[in-house]
Image (cartoon, one colour):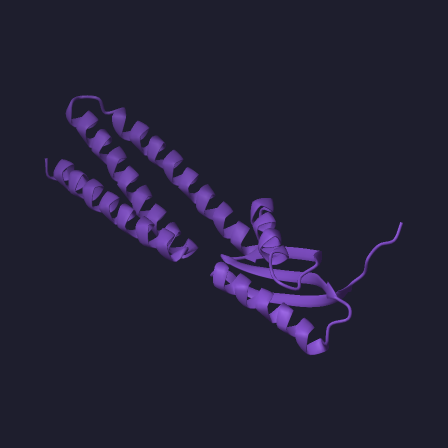
Length: 179
């Protein structure tokens, strides 16, 4: 009976630790904390398997112990694969989704002095965003005025999206296309 009670206490405490750690992992956008949360969840699942195995053995079904161990193994493998995929995604640069890029385009095009966007490259590294942006401005503006437009765009993007780590804004002269 002691083993059964130990399993129940382990399930309750590890599940509580999972929810607590998961909450803070999401709040801080931390992959390491999320991996730790899933570690707590896999411990809780292991304890459930132990509980089933112990209870089954005590009730005269000794096959329940190895079956529970097999189920625990599957849960741990699934959690491991999820953590591995998340870590791999964060180690490799990838573009931000098109919805985010569309939001950036709309925001930039609504700024005074911006006549167009010539280039927009975004990438995620870890949980941070990097942006390379080329905007068009009136070719007759003074350098100081063009710089001010670029600086306004830069500051607005950083204020709007706290996950941005770095933005490079380049200004090109706006050229009307004659056809």
